[in-house]
Amino acid sequence: MTLEEIEGLFKRLARLVDASQVKAGNGTEWDYTFPNGETHRYIINNIRALNEVEDSVSNLLIWIWNAKDYLKLHAEAKGQPAKFIEDYNNSDPCLPICGDLANRLKHGEATKSRSGKFPRLGSVCFSAPQSAISSLTFRAFEVAIDIGNPDGVDFRRSDGVRLDLLTFQ
Image (tube, rainbow, N blue to C red):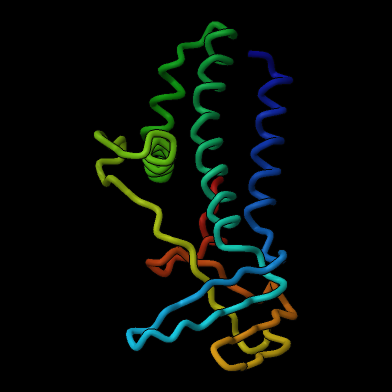
């Protein structure tokens, strides 16, 4: 593993961080059927689809955790013990959680937890203040929202944590 390859890895991580911050997009829509049997459609224009946001965050977590293996290879190529990288990861309060999330994303289930917390990512949702909305249209069995300022929208996990607050230093 060369220094040039490590630099390329960190450039990739920077692109993934940037991609995870994008809020504008082609929009999203879904149907909801109420207990009385009525189905309503919800359409939100000019915002990134929730599954795209989820994919971005997932890719970022996996690649952050994969970086550990690249750094271990680089340390060994330089004659340094790879254990230093593992010890650093384990001493950081966020990296073991990142590892748990990445491993759950890659393998589907977690039988062990590096952090001891067995974390899970909640589903993605968002909130849009009035200042982000350019129009709101009500039709029979349909609501359409046009987002005029996508940067004003907050993407969150279902537990309320804002995704743009998930930063990695």
